[in-house]
Image 1 (cartoon, rainbow, N blue to C red):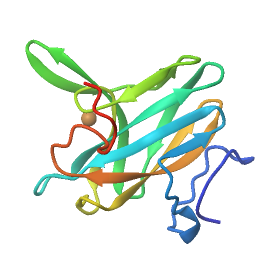
Image 2 (image 1 turned 90 degrees about the vertical axis):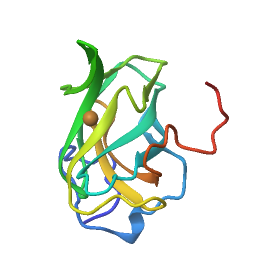
Image 3 (image 1 turned 180 degrees about the vertical axis):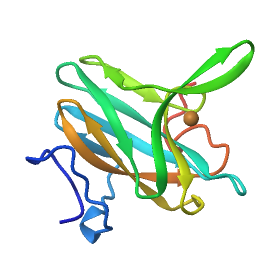
Length: 162
Ligand SMILES: [Cu+2]
């Protein structure tokens, strides 16, 4: 038990206990034909108990959906969309993220993100936070998001494209 959960017979089961086998020093994690590129999180600010997690989901296969996110670091995890409503940026939970074939779905500050809610401890820059994602077809995959500074806009170290 424990550690990496990959496409087993029981796709909705998660292993919550920490495991040395979990550590992966790679920047991208494959889940079937979905590749999760450069997952990162923002350090939680002050006494804040929420933090966003961001990544690029590359779908190299058929249509799929991200249907669940969870983390042992938070009491609740939701998939959020950010929208401007009446001049105010608001975040709303979405049931799932559609991942069209051959596309990149970018989770970024001010847009789509995974929201860690009710953090059990502050997210500290330089640490990693575990997030368990479940795809409708590709199944479950565990990632570790590197924690970037409060207010960071990207995963860092990537070529500046915008
Ligand atoms: Cu949010």
